[in-house]
Structures are given as C-alpha cells and as structure tokens.
Image (cartoon, rainbow, N blue to C red):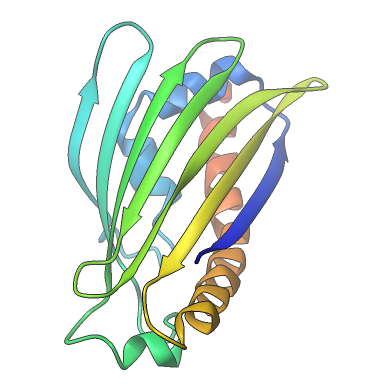
Length: 169
C-alpha cells in the first residue's frame, strides 16, 4: 500500500528558466537545503543526450523534522537518497523521481513536470510514498506526507530566489 502526495506550485518564471536551472547541479543542491547548512550532497550528475539530465542527491534530514515513529526505526541520522531524471525542453520539462531512505522500509517514486502557466510556469509533483511496515505503514506514510508538505514552502522560496537571480543575470 502507499500514500499519494500531489503538489503544484506556480512560478513567475517561464519554462526555459526552469529548464536551465534543472540542468545545473548546484540548483538541485540549493533547492533541497532545508536548514541552510549546505549538507546536501550531489552524488552524481549526468547530462545525457540533448535535454536529458540525471541527478542523485544525498540529503540528511535535520533532527526534529522526522516523525517520531520513523525516528524509532533509525540507527543514526536519517539520510534521504533522491534520484531525479529529467527531459528538458523550453516548452516543457518532465521528470521521474525515486527516493529511498537507507536503513528503513520507506521509499517513494513518481513524476514531476514543469509546464507553462500564464506568463510563468507550474511545477507539479506526484509521488507515491511507501512504508513497508505491517500495521503501521499507513500512519508512517501519512506522517511523511505531512513532513514533506511542511518543507515545500521553504523549497518553493529557494527555487524562486534561484530563478529570480538567474533571470536578473
């Protein structure tokens, strides 16, 4: 069983600006730097054929941002490993995401897209979060979804700042 998370955010910057950002490994690191410590690690970054990008990130989760039931499953610091694969064009960006939490039965996978939205663009994310824990899995999944929703505001702000700075030149 899994719990679905669908998020969508509008940006005043066009799809070409987003495509350029997604093709920059530093953008991926900055967008996930929740606590501003710079501990996000870009483990791998590949530019494949024209317009295709693959990035693997390792993200430690700050204490206090982990649901208590998940914290009990850990033998140390919670680290998220996230792989994103994007196809980038000036008209549309489409991606797939896979997330694993080593040492836990928690994972996620789904799709992402950046499409035109008026004079700007819209980033949409659709993930299925899975916690393979008998009897407790659904509750853990809901807590993970709540945690992710709580982090999206600061991620949105970091993406907005990056796009504005790139646009300003």
